[in-house]
Image: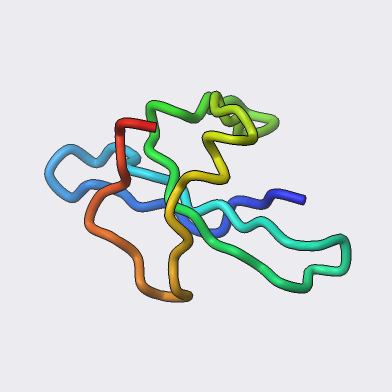
Length: 76
């Protein structure tokens, strides 16, 4: 299960910098948060779609709750 939790907006340009994606077990237990750069996400009115393989997504560093980085890694 993947859910968008937070969107980081760049102050200077007012564009999305990254989206924090939450991954958890079926019951919402063991939630892990990862910051995914905007270039790896397709935005539309119905959903956000990741353009990362499951293996690449698993390689994104896990965040501590509330410890949002200034920018997300663009290389993944």
